[in-house]
Image 1: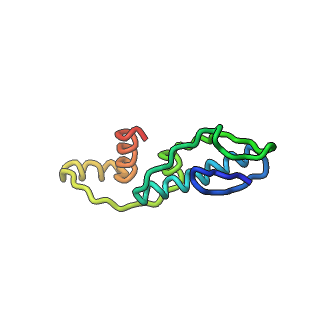
Image 2: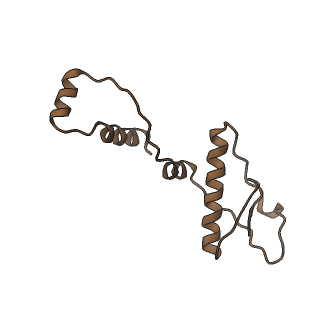
Image 3: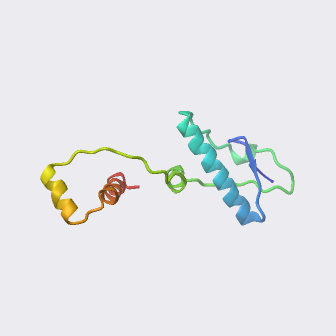
Length: 112
């Protein structure tokens, strides 16, 4: 059993590696849920203050919430945009995929 006291969540894993991955996943999901609700993420506890049994392992788990969110949320969203007519015609003649170009440009602009 894995306990993440700062986030008030429990999970489990088949071995230590799986347990850490499961903890990372649970923390990621809870973290982006809190962010979406406009709530602050809790500060990590000092490891020396975490209550645990003699045979328990106490460790920190790193989670990149931006990366976790992008891997989890692949739902497409429709956006309207305005470009000059001449550019639209030229792009259509060239067979440009507007959505792909916009996604690539946004990823580059946001360094995501």
